[in-house]
Image (cartoon, rainbow, N blue to C red):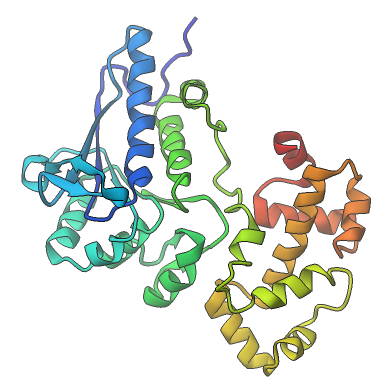
Length: 329
């Protein structure tokens, strides 16, 4: 027997507008689009009407996305007034798009009539420019979290999760996390069984928890152009030693105050949080690559006990070490 459709009527087709713009990231547009249209396909096989009417909209009738792909779009004027969900894509052109008065006004007006609004990757900059993230918690691609926080101080930027749900606003991290976000929206509308079926059809993890961190911290904090990349490598080699603010600032050749300020500006977190992330990342690798018990992993990674490891892992990844190993190991 097919699972029962839950929160919305099976006779209701909800309009989903996905905003695109020049130099939008292609997968930010097509990823959520595919999730919603695949949901409709699955419902059709069960003799049910589509749950979503999905449109890609822009200020013109076509845009050129990353890679030179041309996407046919519905112009703003033809989009109509009724809407359920607005999804803002991200990409290299997001900042410029957010500065366009016509687009910003359209987003504001569209958001007023929508049940919920979501952004993928740097699409958060467009929502922030429209004032829709003021006083809210939000996330974007890890490379741009510090910039989003600096540019829009009224937004509480959390660089850790892959997506965040704050009231009617959803924001997600980089690129493929838009698929996770869209799956979460489908689950909210139609229930978990339908969402799981969609995820299996798309051969993706069904679904990564929103509070799972943007993997991996080794990538996030060790990019070659990262100001503290060398320090992070040193931390990785000294996880069981004294990693106090004083020692880290001495290692970086700065005063404690300057080091704390610059570290937060660069990474979006405090030095203490940065050390914790390095330790948790090391523990994560051991969970995946070894059969070490948690007690041994805690000792290897500089945690005082299994419980301290568990609490730190929960803060960073949203799940405990045991659950993480069972899910991803």
